[in-house]
Every structure is written in structure tokens, then in C-alpha cells.
Image (cartoon, rainbow, N blue to C red; front, top):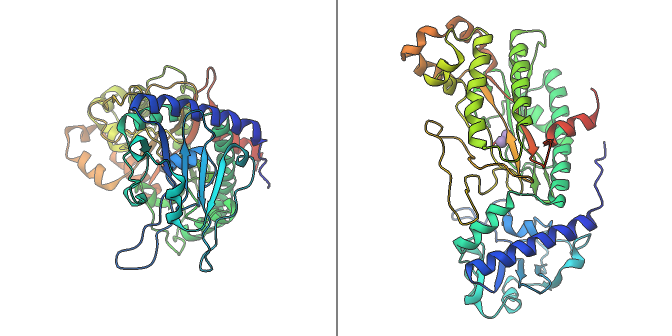
Length: 446
Ligand code: GLY
Ligand code: MN
Ligand code: MN
């Protein structure tokens, strides 16, 4: 199925207008005249000439949809057209980055260089007036990344709020991910191994592992209890009980991050648990609204999860007692989610304001990845989970709360590993936009 791309010309012009506005304010605040952003350079393995996959500076790809341009630079001076210094080396060993083309090029003064060192001649001469955002290995002569904190705090704070162009990119990334999730589920139902499900996912997404925004998590059975499971068994298990897949896709530098959990037997108790987790997750997604404190939503998830544990006969205490005694944290030992955009775990998740003040995590929630209050344009994941993790259950067994756990029920669920359901949701002026559910819906019924 072809994925429709919207007309990006007008969207990109508005996006750039927003970026220049934010950059003007950030430069003024931090006291610099120019914004200089290296795309980055390759990193090499220790004592070797093998390079790691190139990962572009996220600030660079915020300005233009170019993710494979090591040695290139972006320069912005308020009042002037942004300049792209584009490295297209004379090289017969590697594929040379393609000449810039498409909807974005008319907005840049583009200088093509053939050697990385040539960039220096095209960067502002008054280096001490430059805010240079980049890694240390982007240093070029006197051009040394200084990463002014005040400037970065300002840009990161505002980056949470996506432009219409960015949302268009993320809708496409979600559609690619949803399509590949369907292919992965089909492979699971046919009895494929984790490795083969992973390959089915990549083939459907038409992305290599390095193009994905993060490494796929593909778990059969009890492997779903390992939060970051990356092992990919080559052989299918003797019995199939469950399938958890956390896998996203990229589009023009933007990410999607999607998790689904499936039961092999859609009539069993585990499917019942999935259904109730799904209903809870949808309730949480509906609360992605302007003014919502994300940390409060996370804390509330524990209360709701306590209700599900009780309803499914896993605990004998009340939902409130399950939260207070730390029982829900045994079953749900990670955060509700995080901001997403240019990076799968996007920046400024704890920012109180544009000046770098932070909002602390609520006590007892060390793995929460976001405490910010939602405002229109924010895109966040909502990814509650419920897992049967041997190590944590063993810990629970040693506490007084153990007497109120229905261990036979718990033990019966261990073979399924766990459940996570994750959508990417946009906070708007009104109803939230669920990028993930919309993407699945666009695929139609199975
Ligand atoms: N896929 C990583 C995460 O969900 O945060
Ligand atoms: Mn996530
Ligand atoms: Mn995920």
C-alpha cells in the first residue's frame, strides 16, 4: 500500500517561519548573532576504520529533511535566508549524498563543498558571536561547538510544540509503522520466530534497522517481561502464547513509537487482560489535553491499573492499597511515556519553562520520563504496561503485601510475559489526535 504524502511546500514555509522566529528569540536571549549547526561527523570503532551508522544532529534535521549529510552545516543569521553548506565529497568509495532537491531547497542558500574543511570558509568569521550546537567531534578549526545552555533550553522547550509540517511528517511515520505492525502480526499468527517477525516488519516498513527510530522490541511469550528485549530468537517457540511488539518508523527525520500486544488465543484470559488494558490506555489517550499535568496522568495510571489487577483476580486488596503498598509498581515498573518527534525520546520532557527550570518527578516514580504540562502541539506517547517479571514478583513475595496477591493467578500469566500498548498522541486545542489509532484505522479492517 502506498502512503500518501501531503503537499509539503506551504507547510514547510510555515515551519521555517516558526523556526526562524524561535531562533531569533533564542539568539537574543543567549546573546549571540548567528546560529551554526553542524550535521555531525562519523564516529569510528575503537582502533578500527569501521564507522558507526551516522546519526544526524537533531537540530540540523529540524531545519531540513536531510538525515544523511555528515560534514554539512546550517547557518542562520536573523534577517537572512538560512544557508546550507552541503558536503558532497568527490568520493568513489561511498555513495555521495544526493544533490539537494525537493520542496525545501528554495528556502536555503546552498553552497556545495567537496572537502569537509572547505566548510570553514562559508561559516561566520566572528566565531565568538556564534551559538554552535553540535557534538565535540564536529569541531572544525576555530569553530568549536559551545552549546550555549540558555539557547538550547529555549529551543528545546519550544520544540515540544510541533508545527503543522512536523505533524504531517509524524502522520506518515505512524502510517509506515502501523502497516509494518500489521505485517508483523500476520507473521506471528503464521508461527514465525522473533527473528522472522522482525524481518517481516522491516520488509513492510521498507526501512533498514538503522533507518528505524529505535531498535525493534519483538517478544514472544515470557520474553515480553523483559522491557528492552532485543535478542530475537531464530527458532519459533514450541508453544505460542503471546506477542509483544514495540516498533516504530521514521519519516524525514521524525519518529513513530508503537507497541501492540497480541494473544495467540483471542478467547483466553490473557486477551481479556489485553482488552481491559486497551480500554484504560484509550481513556488515558483521551486525557492528552491542554493543561494536563503529564506526571499526574502517570500517577493516575497506577490507580487505574490497581483496578484492573483487582478485577482480574490478581490481587485481593483494593486498587488504592495496591498503589500505596507499591504493588502496582511491581506490575508497571516504567513511566507512562515521553515526548516524541525528531528523537523517539524527545527533549525537554521535564521543562517547567523556556529558561531551563525543571519539574521533578513525583516521589516513588524514578523511571517517569516526562513531568511537563501538556499544551497544544505537544506529541507524547501513552504506553501503560502490565508485566509478570520474575525478579520483581520475587521481591513482592518478600513484602507484607504478598498475602494479598493471588499467586496462582499471577503464576498462570507468567508464560505471557506482559502487555504494553503504546500510541503517539497530539495535544490540540480540543480533542486529542491519536496518530497511531488513525494510522491503523486508515489501513482498514483486516
Ligand atoms: N520504544 C521505546 C519506548 O517505548 O520508549
Ligand atoms: Mn515509547
Ligand atoms: Mn515504544
